[in-house]
Image (cartoon, rainbow, N blue to C red):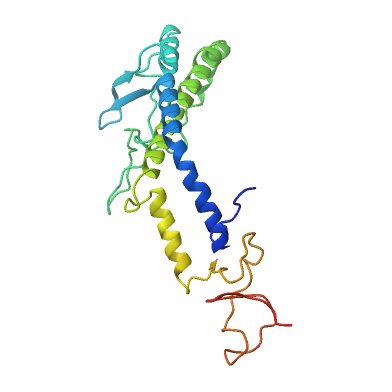
Amino acid sequence: MAFLFNGTLTASQFDRFRTYIRNQVTLIDARIQHLQAEKARVGNLMFAYDEGGVPTGSANDPPTTYCGKLFGAYEALGGDIEYDLQVRSAKQPVFALTGNEAQMSQLSSNGEVAGVGGLSDAQSATLMQSLRRWTADDLGYRREALERKIRRAIDYSEQLDLEISELLLMKGNADVAGSLEYMISQMESLAADRRYMPITDDSKDPDPHGKFAKAPVAAYMPGGGGKGTTSTSYQRTVDGLVKPEK
């Protein structure tokens, strides 16, 4: 697989990858345009909740979008969004509220009380199961399957937003943290640092295939001529790769 390496590599390998990744910048605008068109097709469905987790309203895109069509079908089949379809976006997570030193939290952020074991509800549970059983196919096909489609569509819409935001960030200048040029400059700084051993300086002995990128790091500076003992194995040093001397 192309560029299948992470933090341990040679400078030549990174040079090739840098050329490739910079060439991809020319495609960012077209990708964003495609994603925005897909977002317009999918649409979105959002809910607002009060502090107790009770739905206070919803916002839906026009019925021509995919979410709009699913929402219309859900209502047409008798679904009530206020009680049956309380979906949340990634920015509306459900979590346990913080307690204090005297008592643990008993509520979640959606207003639900934390349950306990031993409900002793066998009689009512049996009756509810019997009441639902003869409509199980109807509920599963006309409601639950549609609810899953709505939740997946909303999740897909949010993923499109995230990818668009990431691509816009990639286009930033080198002084914008997280941009493509910013990350490239960080890698170039590491490659220029002789003390950073994971990136091997192979300028004297090019290794674009990375055959020796994972050679052991030398515990000392090998080589003859008064610089140390003779190397008997492949080792990475502050001056690059050292091969066994014959």
